[in-house]
Length: 341
Image (tube, rainbow, N blue to C red; front, side):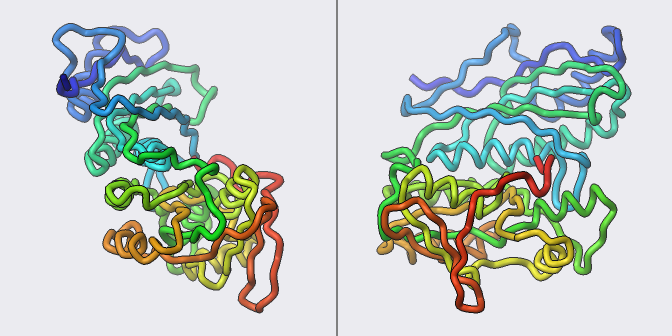
């Protein structure tokens, strides 16, 4: 029997070192509960969650991005969207999240309120509940104002896991959107750079198109979101894990003009710049048009395109350049843009 998802519960919160009940109660009443719901009638240290099918996926991630606010998003929306997308890449429908806040002493209430409101909005858009949370305070100058950890649980919707072992020779490689915007947007804000037109992060959840793709199962063989390491890093990981060669056509990969200009200026390869609302999908060749038709109906994936195919055994990634030459794509040896999430 399925039980309704309960409303969340939050432990005591304080922003001042050694602070007491009045501020704690004010934060709970004024910031967390209006955003995430009322406490359970009988508070507990764990919140029950029902997974109708009994098949679940779980993930966790920590977010330490600086600055806290950037064009197209902030640490709060990033924390929700990143965890939602991680569940989707496993073939799971997100059901519930937890949120842990590490607050630096002296963080302004207005900043915290803006972040929490952004989390609520992102959760509402993705149709997921923030079920439980916790806060801890660290000394002033021992952090960057605010860190967030989110964990998520989802109901597995695909008949087989969307893992590299599911990739097959001949599979089509589908990219859900243009690449590199998140990394460049965060870097520009962090270092006070400006580009014309401005670069806006692609921070968004992919829940709507992915859930429709799940409904067409077994349409997808594998999926990977293009966060740290970008498209190039993700393809190298998948090729190595599956031991299939991957061949892509760089001319087909959409890169916004401002992103390309920034990468040319700063010496970055757009293939390795991070995204937060973009994924690569491995699809049987006969299902490519169906997948693209679904993706292109949604604003977040309207620029979806076919960028290559899986080849023979080997585990290498090769890219045909716009000049007609072929270059080997190697795994990134370092992080071009640290702290992008």
